[in-house]
Image (cartoon, rainbow, N blue to C red; front, side, top):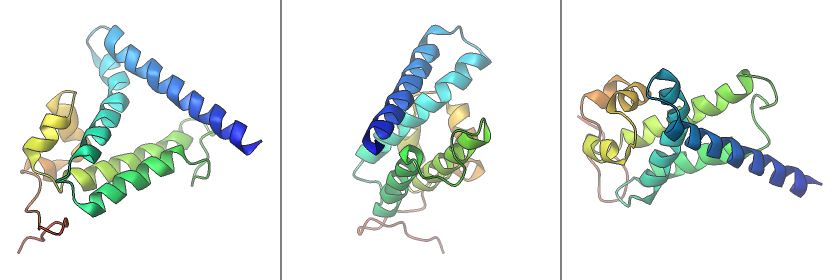
Length: 146
């Protein structure tokens, strides 16, 4: 029974993601298209960043944990609660992407983002605008400034 429920849940998530991706291409340019395209753009960024070997190990783990939290049936706020159920997913993914993107050079992150640069800067915050990572050590962790 749990396997069937998990498979149905994954199918629903895939269907909604597919509809959002199609909507991002079909809708006319404007705010609606930008909102619909935001989640698919985040998924593309997540996939492209995880493929980079320059991404530090801790950032890779953070992205994997965020993805696991989103697909997990056990969550802080259940997804069947309208609006609020999805906000915890959005917060977790945003925090993981901010953490990972701030550990890479700004130009690499901008190249991996398929949407407009303004949306990327809004997602990643003011520290990202200043230039991204301060330096990457050879062991895969980020060197602290100072």
